[in-house]
Length: 326
Ligand code: SAM
Ligand code: SF4
Image (cartoon, rainbow, N blue to C red; front, side, top):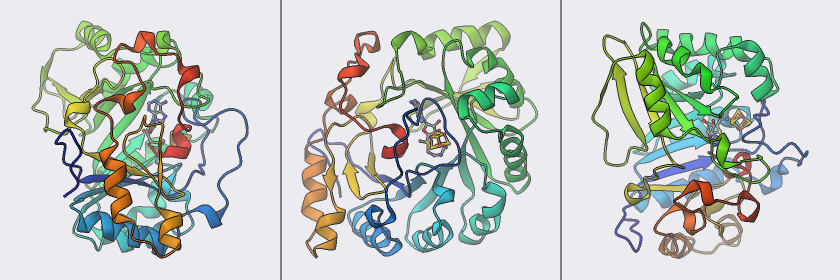
């Protein structure tokens, strides 16, 4: 069992398969061109499997593959198939562009729930956020997944003045479609020009939603980061992920592994623990995993202020989101 010094049991691991991506979201990927990691630095398929086995032997029961875009990793299919053999709930967060090409693989290994990111329903705004013209394709793929019976959650990062006016349109989507839209507060990472006025805090968003819709609160799970709601008579739900304005660190059960095999005990942690080099040197990495977990701060990686207005993004020590794995 992986328990930290605050008694939190960690049974959920997010594994980044790559820091490469077929989109260029402004909030995730720094504008300055940073080369992707060379493949020699990435965990190989066997190394991902070995590290997964160690985490599973220590109590991990849920694994989410992420990135970068996990589906652009050339061995994505093989990785999904191999990890699906572990006794875990396996899922992915994807931008959805390649979801149609992976539908058979998902069905074959028993993946039935996916998080798909989509920040705008309007082609021009989708393009200006992602720098790619894939809006229509992502929409089509979301419908394809729904038709195939998947539980689909849409992740939308809400940024003031960029897409916050589209929130009602996203909720409108849930009227007839059994979609679960999650509005995520904009978080600061290396190179993403985060400033506190760009955050639309969950409380404000809820107030704005209440002007257009009558909704009810739904029950959340203990480890849920999303506070769920449904509009009366809608087929789907919506949720708010209030990392910046009301963090949920006390119920945290998440660990992260970057594509280059560094363990992070928190999305916002300054420190990383290299598991890949010791593994390649034939060392036992389990004590390193425990040490890393022992150093986990009580909240916000020990470096973000709970009052997000006081955060100076320039002073934070972290990687970009695309290099961590969201
Ligand atoms: N490429 C995949 C995707 O876009 O879903 C997986 C990786 S992406 C880094 C994982 C999630 O992190 C996405 O839902 C994305 O919207 C979210 N994300 C990235 N940068 C963020 C930021 N600065 N604030 C909040 N969420 C962010
Ligand atoms: Fe790529 Fe996902 Fe980051 Fe967008 S959020 S740049 S799709 S990794």
